[in-house]
Length: 168
Image (cartoon, rainbow, N blue to C red; front, side):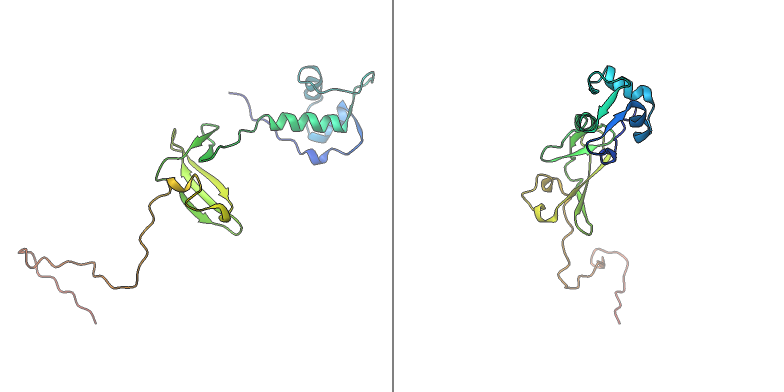
């Protein structure tokens, strides 16, 4: 399994600026050999005929954003991203619950492959019976209608023990 891939903060790159290899390494806190590997093997283009290598900020930004966007795996309708499988997966039917937050609705469910808990933030405006994950919801508890129903049953007729339901 490959190591954890770093997501670089692209807003640190100044506009219309030329960086040396050492400056790029210092900017992101990485080794100079990493930047040289990007140039040699991964397609980062330095300014032609520049020694030491100079890298224009637009080229660096485009290279890193392309590299980071290639790793993304968008979820289709009815899927959430499973951290254990490291892939978008379907949700186990009957496992979806919702939890309201300040601006969004946190939808929680279980991966249908490995059973790991997954979560996804959904805009409450789009959460209805038409939403793809809505079909996987746990059956909701029947709301109380306000009428009193006794939870006890007295088995006197069946020859059982006498029970006293006393109310004050």
